[in-house]
Image 1 (cartoon, helix red, strand yellow):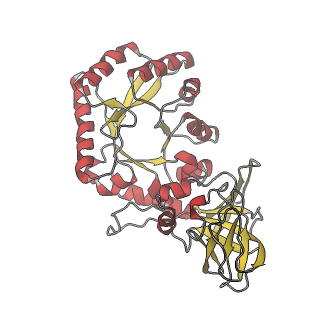
Image 2 (spheres, rainbow, N blue to C red):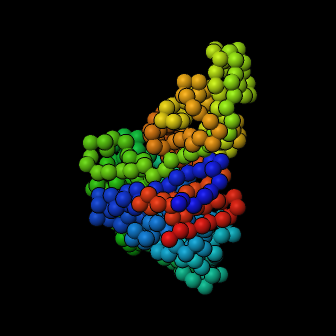
Image 3 (tube, rainbow, N blue to C red):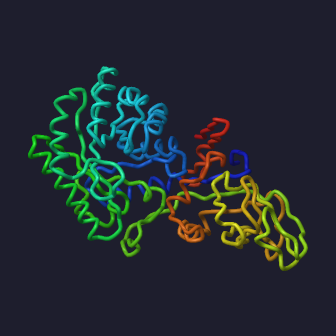
Length: 388
């Protein structure tokens, strides 16, 4: 008998598929695979996902901010932990004490990290972020920037520069090549000034499959772990399994006559007598309001039911007139399973990463391995149950 859990809205997360995707990533490169678990592991729950990946052999993780790194450290995640964004000054010392690798994008960052390392009485490990044309974070790829780094390093003795990296814009192959060449130019400029860095990386999940010659010392794999197959790799013989399904329950079913308006606004007036099912989910759970008024659909009894009216924060309505037998308590699938990530993203006019990353803390997360429930996590109540 399966464990019970609150079925208002919930995510079913397949750890078997997650581990298979990790093994797939490892099979595609000889470089180190750094698993990117930022943004709550793309909505999946960072702690439980990192634990599963650690069980599968991963010893290298990356996140976006200090708090994400510290959450994982406090949950017992060991191995390398790279923060790819800038770290708040008040978190630097704690991160260094926990052995977290930090990103520096300016000489001011180097000095701030050095001061925190001195206060923590522990050397800090740093990767230099290079702006190769993405124009987000990083040192410019110039001799002047290389000079500034070389001058600064003797003044920051409490840190060690362990890596040099950048991020591809993934616009065109020509532009990606320009970016990769810029990173390698910066690597040479630094080496000419006595700053030798062995760990160089630029490829994410898309770079992993698209640019094998650019893997260098590591690849940073995020989306592929969660079943977001890189675009333009459909012809390649590797498996990428979707890892998540988003569920809710039917709360109530109403018989609504033609001419009535359902929910907020008056964008959609019923043109026929209809059966309208209210679902226990809304944009507060991560179901986009953009899918209002028929733009989105949900699976009920194996059939697609269109969204009616505006998606509310906590509830939404769907038309089940043509789906017989829908009753309160029925399971509705919003994403995953019969509604692929790509289909859902196309409905939303966005990308697949956003669709899964915006899933909020409110849905209960139910983790399965080999089909069996192994963990139920209720983030709102800070309750976690594990089953052996």
